[in-house]
Length: 337
Picture (cartoon, rainbow, N blue to C red):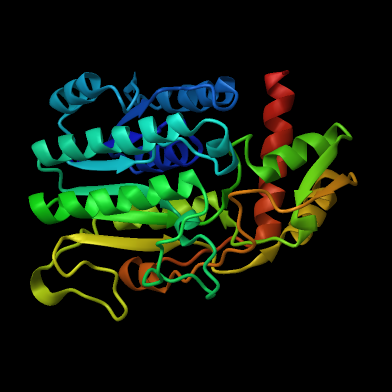
């Protein structure tokens, strides 16, 4: 049986991926530093859910070179799914050093150990933010991504470049996933839809940037998990001429970049209106100008992922919001904080 190491296991996507892999009966080891970027109680609740499924876990910071090395030596994974990162575009304006420590130094530690242990496949989180102010829609893996507009985006673009270097020199198979606005149950409290829900319920004003003229490719967590898990066995290779049309497969390395999104552009105001419907409350809106580091619109072309895995997102945003609100009300009723 393949042994899978998942970093960021107490995070939103990491938790959801671990849950799916454990349900499939796979051997999974979780790692997270449990930082306080957002309420650690939610991270601990996710972790409690996973440890009840007998998942071993270590609290380790990716930037801790020795601890990461020791974990690889003891667990000896075959597959690594790196979902640990300092998230958040807006937070990168306030705390830039956190992004370098986690997203650059931490990722380098993962790559070094993947190289040493001849990992069969490294899947790592990139982001749709690398497209910056791209004006061509939908965003395709072949588009130029040389003009990031946030430090978070720059750190993710750096991940792609460093991973390609390791993949080329050490023949390390790598797949980078550019996630598009992931939402759903057990989500991140720092994300807009989560903040909106909290403030609508407490009758506080919600901040709406660019006066609501924002569009996002909202992608439900179950669709993200489904696409990622299907990729585990789809190891990039330069052998056997296994390229697809418009493939992002590197000509010099077992390396590929893939978009993973819902492939539909949703207006922010429509998203908020659906939240109001499900919460049965109207929001109080505080319209603000565009914030630094943010982008007007995102929209994924996930055709390549579909060709490789059969990926097909099943959850539209109205259904996804309904499921999120149900989870939110239930979770915070039980949590009592």
